Amino acid sequence: MTEKTIQIELAQRHDYRFDVQFGGDAPVLTTDEPAPLGTGLGPSPVQLLSAAVGNCLSDSLLFALRKFKQAPEPIRCQITSEVGRNADNRLRVLKMTAVMTLGVPAAQLEHLDRVLESFEQYCTVTQSVGQGIPIELQVFDATGARLK
Image (cartoon, rainbow, N blue to C red; front, side):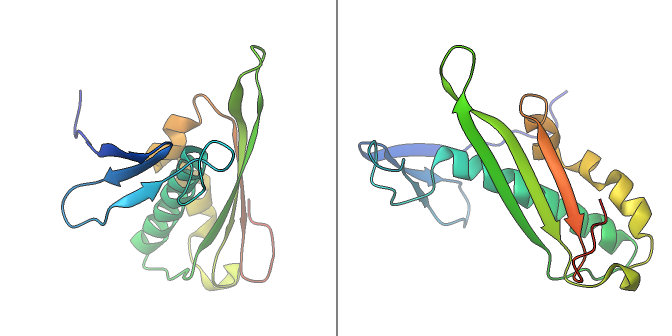
């Protein structure tokens, strides 16, 4: 059952450069492939995919902690996407690694263990992408202690 339909529109500007229109008050985003195909004047599709995964994970973690009235800000998330050739010698995103860092020490957050056990299960994008691309997740607090 579909709960919501999202529609965006892409319009080619030049070669591999497109304007992405999200609708509403959202600004237009220009995308482009890096050289030699494009000119790199905007994020590439792989960068957009990486940003979507990182943004969704960050939103999900923030939402889960705020449900317990916790303030983990500022959250940072670094996504590394490994691009390589598959068995058919075609370029694919082979793996993604997300490294999230909370803005405060873990000791300042209540219910953190419970949140870390479940927050990624509520991340729509990561759970969808993860069905086809392995996604490794690491979470650290502000002191550098690894939490997950």
